[in-house]
Amino acid sequence: MEMVLLTALGVGGATVIGALIGFIFKNISHKFSDIVLSFAAGVMLSAAVLGLILPSLEYGGRFGLLITVGGIFAGALCINLVDKLVPHLHKMVGQDTESHHNANLSKVLLFVTAIAIHNLPEGIAAGVGFGSGNTTQALLIAGGIALQNIPEGMVIIGPMLAAGVSPRKTFACAALTGLIEVVGTLIGYFAVSIASAILPFALAFAGGTMLYVVSDEMIPETHAHGSERGATYALLVGFCLMLVTDVLLG
Image: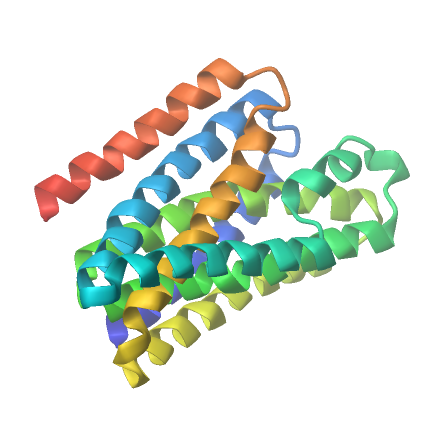
């Protein structure tokens, strides 16, 4: 349990680290941000497949394939529904971060709310990973999500400061989005601990949410500013790094 709690704090704290970087370096280039986000996408993609989807097949037994496929689509549809209600990063960051002086506070708050809402299922994915009993895989999954949270925390800062929000309140909002992820991690862990029968579906569900986030949000964002080639290789590096780590530690 201590490991789960520390991991939850680490995953949520990554957003805070990103926010601090955003305060220090207010004019981070799109190219650098895209490379970091692409690397995180590769890590998350590998973690989703190796740490969540393949274990789901393993634990699913006779109906493992059906449970896994159903869980993947259920997770993707869940995030898709959230996207319908609250558009996320790649749909809002451009209009808010590239128009600092004309930023509208209500749009900025909606942007921050969107990140917070999307952080809940990402946190659940991190927590569900521990339900499989494979701590190494769970830590790799959490690490991938944490890497994604750093650039996300970075992009929160500029729009809020430009909209007239005080630095203290801006940092508090960024920390709150990270706290949501801590809560999600604990929910995911306790859910599969209490009802181990749902573990195969929960693993696939978490994997589906991560696949959706990578395909629908992270890749489009990293390919929107002319850095497609570098972003693609960064994704491959992230994926292969996770693959090597999984083999060496497995």
